[in-house]
Image (cartoon, rainbow, N blue to C red; front, side, top):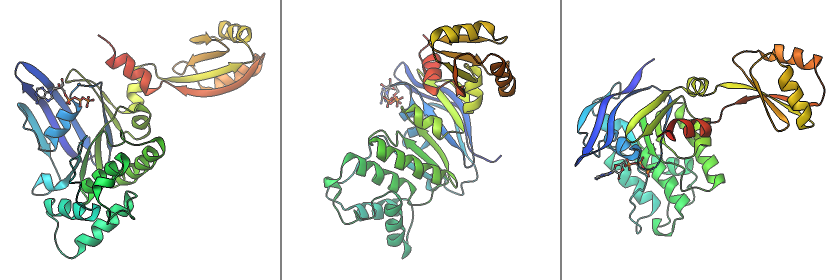
Length: 297
Ligand SMILES: Nc1ncnc2c1ncn2[C@@H]1O[C@H](COP(=O)(O)OP(=O)(O)OP(=O)(O)O)[C@@H](O)[C@H]1O
């Protein structure tokens, strides 16, 4: 697997305080990585160093396969992008294209195409001062991708959007992810669950957990099965009878997926069917893992 970015011992020290403390991780080509952590855990500081806006105190950042100037291969969406309210969206995009080193006759059509991609196709001639928060967020994404970067760094790309807008932008990011490597920070764990090849958990500037969602899940409770019953009594009877690790929770019984296959469970359930109304798979949610990993003192 080709690596686009390799970070080692990345640290940012302010007077007597480490905002980012010794991060080591890498990003493989065309993967999406979610940077997760509570407020103040160092997400923005990390992304700013990777984007070249902030100098690290120590540690190394190595881009590979991104051509001569790595910065021209990076697209960055800051948490709070700065816009000139008097500019139109197209003017702003042309400015962003110029700053990214793009030139030539194609720039205007690329700007229009990119505005269309982020859902601002009709807003090119409108002034940014009149844009809603969601429109600004989309424009911020558009300026980050105008030069078709190999690596896209996004600081909370969907936080200013309503649920419908969030869904749309997540779909856009998934599409971009087919040809781009993405590192994004988010507080919205459902989104991270939906689009992530790798999770990076930050707390107090330190990387306290990392890995593919499946591995992190297995480590923190894994997946299993949920059997629903018509009532609590039937659930408790079933939980007592099963030969595997199981716990009753109201009228549901949770069974660890590590000790039993679905086939074995179905066979057992067909022999003890009393009160069963549903059988399904269940996986520990990222939110629960977050509370477990990040919430620990
Ligand atoms: N210029 C600075 N000088 C001193 N401390 C700073 C500076 N910039 C950030 N910090 C501190 O570094 C820590 C990490 O901040 P950062 O903005 O990276 O966190 P974050 O995880 O992005 O938070 P949020 O989720 O609230 O955006 C915080 O405690 C913050 O107060």
